[in-house]
Length: 284
Image 1 (cartoon, rainbow, N blue to C red):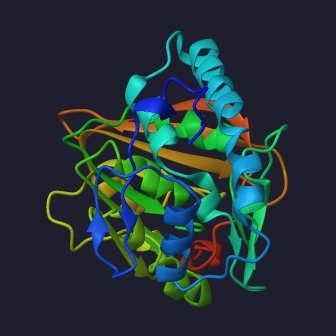
Image 2: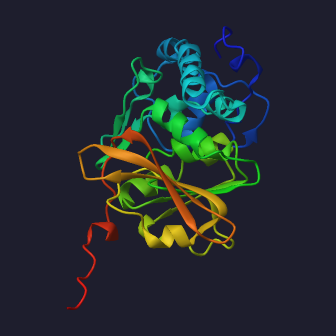
C-alpha cells in the first residue's frame, strides 16, 4: 500500500488466505495479490514484489488524475467513485487470457491507454471507465448490468457502489476464465454469465437501474431499453466500427418514456452477436 495516498491509507481490501478463506481488514499488498492471483487460476509472470511496489507507487498519481478529470467533467468528484477506484486493484485485472500473460506490472500507466486482454477483447483505459462510472450516477440501492464483461474491472468498480452487479460476456473462452476472478477479492455481489448481451438479462426481476454497454453498437438493443427501470440510466457507445463514436446516455422517466443525450466521443471495440445481423427489410 502506498503510504503517500490519503485514500489508500484508510482502505482495507479483502484478500484470500492460504486456506482460501476470505479475510477482511487486511492490506492489499504483494502477498494478498499473489494469493488472489493463484486462487483465480492465473500466473504471476513477471510480477514479483519489486515490480509490485513500483507499480503501486504510481497509483496515487492516477487517483489524483481521475479526481481532477471528474472535477473538470462534472464540477465535483463523486466520493463513492473515487473510493471504488482506490479499493479495486487494477493490476489484478490486467491479464492477457489468450496468451496467459500477466500485464499487471504495467498498471497505472501514464498516459492512460487500453490493454489487449486476448480473444479480441480489451481493457478500457481507466480514465474512460471512471468517467462512465460517474456518468451513470450509481447509488447503493442500484442494480447494474454491464454488457461486455471483458476483464471484469468495470463491474468490479460498480460492485463497490451498487447493491448488485450483473455482467455478460459473449466470448466464451474469455467469459469462462474471467468469472473466476471475483471471488478471490471477496466480490460476492457480482453475477456473471456467458451470452449475447443484446438480450440483456431478462431473468433478473425488476430490471436494472444502470445498464452499461462497454462495446460500440450501431444502435440500442431494444431488449436493454425494456429492462431499464424508470429513473434508470443506460450508457452506450454508438457509431460505426473503428470510426468516431459517441457515448449516449439514455434515461427512462416515470411514465416509461426514454430520453437520450449525446455525450463525449469514444472509441470502443465493436459489439458482436445478434446486433451485427441486419434487421429484416420491411415488405413493400
